[in-house]
Image (cartoon, rainbow, N blue to C red; front, side):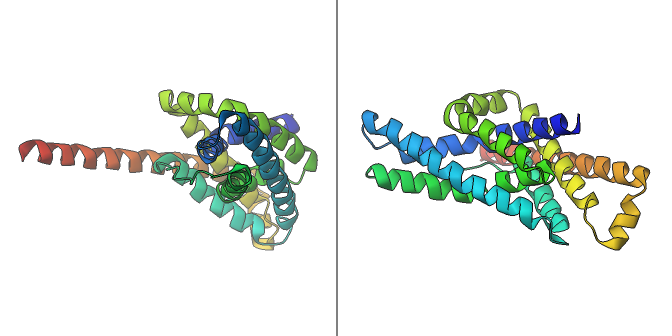
Amino acid sequence: MEFLIALLSIVMIDLVLAGDNAIVIGLAARNLPKHQQKKVIIWGTIGAIIIRAAATIAVVWLLEIPGLLLAGGLILIWIAYKLLTEEKDHEVKAGKNTWAAIRTIIIADAVMGLDNVLAVAGAAHGNFLLVIIGLAISVPIVVWGSTIILKWMERFPIIITIGAGILAWTASKMIVKEQFEFMKNLFDNPFIKYGFEIVVVAAVVLAGYLKKQKEKGKEKEENVRESIQ
């Protein structure tokens, strides 16, 4: 059951975080002839996945170092909050030839995929099989399903909220597993442990919601001022 929950978390993380990578692939290949675009997409994706696999396995290993679970959890909380509050842009330079486009895809994916790598590594809890399965799931998502998922997320914003909640939950589970003596003694109490996880998820979702409401209020005020002028 724990394995299946972790796998479902990884799938949801991939759905929410991997969607933008498909846009990067499309933008990088947009200036090439149609017959070259398919080649660029395939090889760019393969290169990106190899780098992401190596990075994820490295992060899983690094999270064994004392203090890094805590640091990774805090970073993931910030990523979850940003997912709820920031609009992402996709200013990616189109490649002028096949190899330039492939290089652009690999570099852009490596930069954009850092949140995905950390989230999947955290959700896998050191299980390399889960990492491999998570990456295997992310491949078709990135290549084929992302544009559909992005449309779903625009139509049903609750998907993003659920994804951010899962990221926050993954972050909280990373933090409670930190091996510092004082934290270990604190989170040995199931009430404190699960209470902390619930508070982190609720705090991230609430903070994201309040930030969005504040931004909407500012937009309304600006619109009113423009209409008066």
